[in-house]
Amino acid sequence: MATTDAVPVAGESGTADELFRIERRGIEFIPEAERWSVPRNLFGMWAGAITNIEIFIYGVILMAFFGVTFYQAVVIIVVGNLSYLLLGLTSLQGPDAGTTTFIVNRAAFGQNGGRMVALFNWLTQVGFETEGIALVVLAGIALAAKAGFDAGTPLKIVFIVIAAGIQLLLPLFGHGTILRTLKWLVLPFVVLFVILACLTAHRVKLNAVPHGAGWAEWLVGLAFIIVTSGLGWTENGNDYSRYIPRHARKTSIVGWVFAGTFIPSVLLMVLGAAVGTYATSLATNDPFGKLPTVFAAWFLVPFLVVSIFQLFAINSLDLYSSGVTLQAIGLRLKRWQAVLIDTVIAGGLTAYAIFSSSFNTLLKDFVECVIVWIGPWLAIYLVDWALRRFRYAPGELQKETGGLYWRTAGVHWQAVVAQLVGMFAALMGLSQTFFHGLLSSHTHDADFSVYLGIGVAGILYYVLAGREVRQEADRQGELLAGE
Image 1 (cartoon, rainbow, N blue to C red):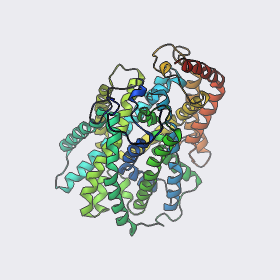
Image 2: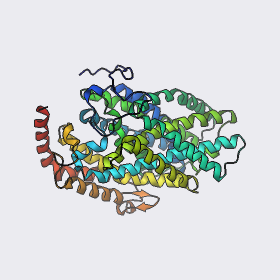
Image 3: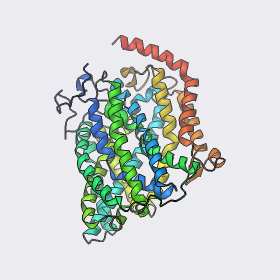
């Protein structure tokens, strides 16, 4: 199989995964004949998603809520965004297994055990979808205000319905349309953010926070950035790499994913932190409503319009992944049906967020909850992959009952135990608004949740399941040799 990074022609292999054509594939295995994508395509898709107002706002929130200086914020942003290497690593299983993340996840947790963490992921994806749609609605309200309309309750409801309906389109068409469309959105947003950087330069107050955060607060801010950057996307990686041929270069996949995420995310978060030195009002419940007090009037409308398109783009990744995750949970749904259900749910949650007086508090608390489950899951997922010598038996992953990954009633209890213990360890190290764990309370409220969750779950899974999984790896080899 060729490992070239050449850009493919849409539909040249006869695949149904074509531009503006509803993708037929969901969680089932993608045959090699339909693997039309190449590693370089992941760069454009991820760059198109990450070059986004959402990432910019995370930088503002870092300055507003964590008490760091601008220079501390820059270090936290750079270090935290190195976690996009994890996204690169969790994009390597899709080409080998030919399926989505939470079907691959059956290898570690079993067919039924995997439903638990798939549910955690579905809730996470719906939460991020709600955040994105809510920001779209807030941008629409800001545009209406600019045009002289007061967005009362009826108009807000109309905006929510319209935003949810538009948001449905890209995920409904599916993988191929998302992959090809998102890269087109990079350039206009880059242009606007370059202009914003120029407008911001003379207003930045580098010493706005004279003393800065201590080591404990620094760790809390770092946990926030890690989860909102690479770690928070790891469960999505294989959903978009599974159309890449099995024998594509792994270094190319990791490299293109990392370049397409780390570079724009660091630049946008740093710019957000710079704006946050003089405009912490953007970290309030309605960031778009505060824009007229921060940006020049001539810049506001094009900025809002492009931001809306970009928010739809990044939200498409969450909505697509939540759809295939809903299938992985076990609901007998076609992919497009799952997308419709998630759109309705996210629309309802958006209404709650818009009419709530604490949108940014809800967002921050939600991100902090994600920390607890995703670190332990990632550790188990990657340790299991390594124990299997970095390969799977695709046919066994697709079995709903029985087979190599079935174990006891479809549950791999070693993984479930490691996940639960890892989540408990993460809670004990958590230091956030709504909860301070025992370890955190005894270490000046430092946040060790990410590191404890990953470390405890990964080590425990290796101890409990290492021997058994290595034996399964030998059986995998026999099955693969027989293909």
